[in-house]
Figure 1 (cartoon, rainbow, N blue to C red):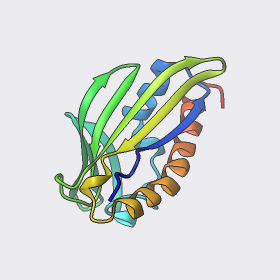
Figure 2 (tube, rainbow, N blue to C red):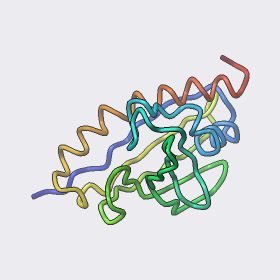
Figure 3 (cartoon, helix red, strand yellow):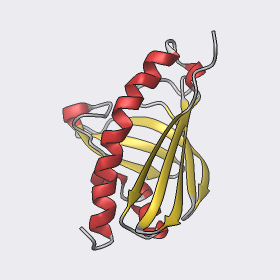
Figure 4 (cartoon, one colour):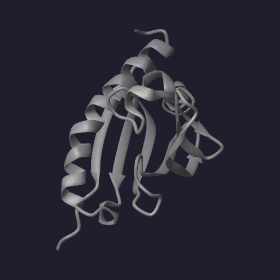
Length: 149
């Protein structure tokens, strides 16, 4: 079986790289669509980068670890393992870079490591549909945070 290639998504956000990085990391709880894409769904209260992990909290106090930060280079890059709702040993790898371009910041998300999943191609296909929606929410929040929305 041939390896499943990494997924790559890009969005230009109407914000400087420092703002774009801060909104993606410190502000993830403001823009992540928890009702649609979370472990606890309608019982989800928040998600945040906390002490080197990405953690979701439910309304009843349960925690679900989504991933562990592997690189933290503000305002240029953040990388993390990614396993919402799965054990840590069944994790993909996500890297998000932030680069200045005319009109704002080019945010590039790369998601790979599909070989850890039982069905790598199907899992990649799910994320191929999900990341654009997630990044759309993020882009809206980055514009609001920069005062350009």
